[in-house]
Amino acid sequence: MPSIVSIEQVRKTYATGLTALHAVDLRIEEGEILALLGPNGAGKTTLISMTCGISSITSGRITVGGHDVARDFRAARRMIGLVPQELTIEIFEKVIDTVRFTRGLFGMPPDEDYIRRLLTRLSLWEKRDARIRELSGGMKRRVLIAKALAHQPRVLFLDEPTAGVDVDLRRDMWEMIDELRGDGTTVVLTTHYIEEAEAIADRIGVINRGRILLVEEKETLMRRMGRKQLTIELAEPLGAVPAELASYNLELGDEGRELVYAYDKAAERTGIASLLAGLTAAGIRISDLRTAQDTLEDIFVHLVRAEDREAEPEAADPEARAAEQAEVYP
Amino acid sequence: MNWRAILAIYRHEIARTLRSITQSIVSPVISTALYFVVFGAAIGGRIQEVEGIPYGAFIVPGLIMMTVLTQSVSNASFGIYFPRFTGTVYEYLSAPISYLEIVTGFVGAAATKSLVIGLIIFATAHLFVDLPVKHPVWMIGFLVLTCLSFSLLGFIIGIWAANFEQLQVVPLLVITPLVFLGGSFYSISMLPGIWRTVALFNPVVYLVSGFRWAFFGFSDVNPALSLVAVLAFMGICLTITWWIFRTGYRLRT
Ligand SMILES: Nc1ncnc2c1ncn2[C@@H]1O[C@H](COP(=O)(O)OP(=O)(O)OP(=O)(O)O)[C@@H](O)[C@H]1O
Ligand SMILES: [Mg+2]
Image: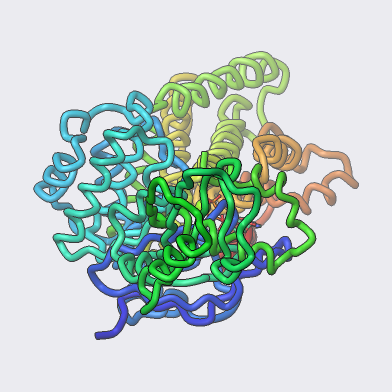
């Protein structure tokens, strides 16, 4: 089956001369939930804007449902719903009017029954006659979602749907996305929150500095990239890692009271047994053992950091990096 | 053609007007009534008539044109600038609609609004003066063409403007002087020699003159020339609009 969205060798250079995307390839399959994960300025919004017709495509080709978004824009755009990153909505309008308006804009005949069901599902039916400025931020975002779904699109782009949304509403949003998948709608969402991608996505794409670093099934990703850590608590603190155990790349922690061993769970030989034997042979007494697994967040940080280091090695200043990280994960 | 989209934009714009009905309709009517009082009564007391027409009646076509012109420009420019300013323009850009449909919706709505205002002023004028209309079809024709072409101009300004100042500056610095010097309150033949020639470079002169001809059957310039001028102006605006959408100027990043 052909992909519902296909992005081939797409490049974007803005009028300012800044290249926001470098020859990106991405295929989105019908019915899946794809999360695009990336730090600020990675190019997530740019990619979505080009697919939806808001930004021009510098070079390359994007098709939606087989329709070229530039040449066959009507057919392509009819299939797409977009919830923008910013809360851009006309605040003097009534909720139901703005939803009807979008439906009309997409050339669909009026369908009051559908709109009632849509608003009910988004818990907006009670508020249908309220002016948008009277709504809370979370409700406004739901109105934007209602607008994006007003013409029954097959692909829904959600650009940071849960930014500035409280925990309850975030869960609601996740449930709603799951329901949409139940209807067969393809959902592409961008997010800074790793736990969000982890919670709802089928596949995860990591994007940084205008390049897609990887796109994988969530489970595969976690399995493949999932490094495990074995922490060995020592009965007596050590001053240094014994020379005969150097091949394990151990790290000494907690002022010498811990040895940390990183291994790959999926590998045939984890090296745990031989390490423990080696410790015993060296006369080191163990008081406890504990293991921990990388979360998606660790994987993500790893990928992006590795790429950033490659991109500008001179910027390897740890303090700047910490500040950067703090920004990405508030 | 995505007619539903055109209708949606049109209705959306009209609804926006109706939400601020006072500001949209009442204020131009009041300001026109003031012109009547000032120009019609005060000056009309001194200038009895122009080319056989009582001065009060003589200025009506010019007054209507003046209001319709400025209203068209401001309605249409605000109509498209507002979504650009708030960011809701993303919806128009991501909808399955062509530039022609966007323009038809926005310009159609802006032109409708100024047409209605023009007609209201026309009706109001009857309260003050006796107002014959010699060629009613041409009168409506000129009015509609003016509404459309200046709404197009407004649309272009609304897309070009980078901030609210620019949105105001063109109407203030370009449209208003052209309108005041466009023969709304006098006949070009009343101007001294050289200025009569200069006036002929003002497109508004042709509009007012053609419109006045539809009322009274005489004009400063040949009404056919007026018609050609209006159509040419509209053609220029259409070309610019087409270019805007083809290149995505100020719309698509
Ligand atoms: N209209 C524009 N003109 C010029 N540069 C732009 C424009 N829009 C975005 N950029 C630049 O393109 C790069 C990618 O921006 P983009 O908005 O796509 O990032 P993002 O991944 O969505 O980030 P965020 O998570 O902050 O929303 C950034 O460097 C940004 O400054
Ligand atoms: Mg973004």
